Length: 113
Length: 112
Image 1: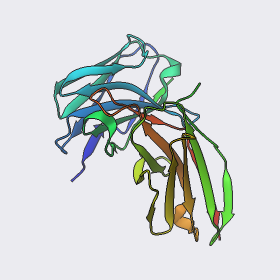
Image 2: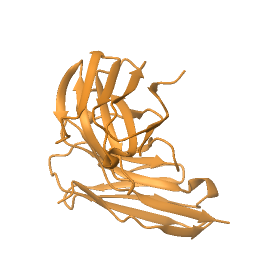
Image 3: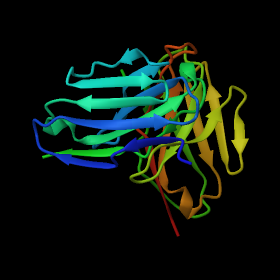
Image 4: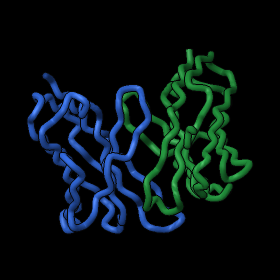
């Protein structure tokens, strides 16, 4: 049983398109995150939600819009994709406060051409 | 200034070697510390938490120096399967606003 699952695993799309990545966790955690890992392997937080409420938005362009329909789901919609959006996007979940382990999904490798 | 800094390596060591990774963090209010491991093209996974008194898990030993804001990971008797990127992770603070900051990772290759 996958604890944090995200789809799709691979996404290749053209510049200007709109795409979504879905994430679900079955761990009962209150907090979910989106991280971006660029070509230099740096893992940077984009958003954090606690019980469906946005609590962290790390200077991410408005083209990125997270949505949390319930605390087990956190989806990421990206409008007007740009070449620089190419990266691996990881969804994660943990108990609130970041004091415990974060569990990551397998990642979505987004390539914008 | 980055919240978490670590030597990116790469470290290339023979099987059986002992290797140490270091990490520094900038926020003195940080409360939780971790080492994660990330295999190539995989997601990060928790290797071990780091406690104030230092802790050991088999061949892995983690140390924390709060005064110097310094964290270390020691791997003894390296195995081929230890080849991965090791990420130093620090939380912002222990509240609902807490977030995890990741270092850039230290790449380790263990050769036969």
